Length: 316
Image 1 (cartoon, rainbow, N blue to C red):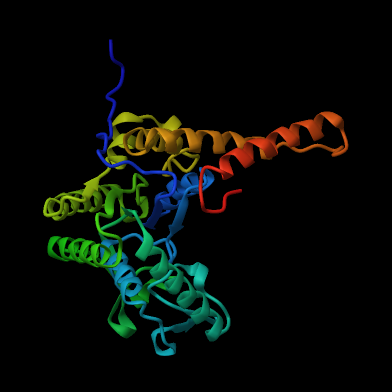
Image 2: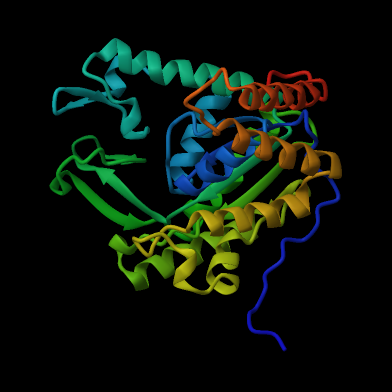
């Protein structure tokens, strides 16, 4: 007897190997998945523009990374005595214009270099809603807590969504290695501030646009992350206290599903051992000269050294 509807991720013919480079961009859920990949000691780069949600803004970010197009002073605005880019997350805001530009353009330079070597791209869309900054008639990625009266909110049209996704794919296929695999997901985090009905409409538009766009490309795939949380983990015990964000247990479950479908056997074993090492590294003692603790650390260092010999990039 079955008591739940399980959602599986189809097994990929091409697998993620331990030396592959993985670039991710999009919502906060993309960051959570990338954190697990990083803990597994794979080579990753996540969100060089910070957390962004809608396909139009993500396409703008990918296009700037593709062209290595640095930001200039006139593209920033000032608010609350800080210099701000409306294309970026608030983590780029500073009190000095040169510092904001240095952070933004340094991330673009690093992102451009990483993309040229990337084997895998993970794009996580969060919303079809977008805000227009009225003083500049500019569609923005983040409102930076500027008063609502300066913005107009609307849903991106189906044409805007598919055009943004299509152009993102073209830019990535142009700058990345030949045969780069592009994985699209929709964040399971519900944007309740938009309204429950509006959130469902927003997510459904994303799913429709992704499926229509990727049908034109062999190397583009859809990962049913949204469906796993909505239809498989259909219980509030898999959410954090806010009842919106998935719990650590849910994120780990989705990551395991993803790994079973996309990691090679070697990669799965490599990541599992690294997770165990990270857990062991958290062990603290009040007496570092305790013979038992010294023996524990020596054995742990030996395990780390074995892992280091498996890859060319720096780990731990």
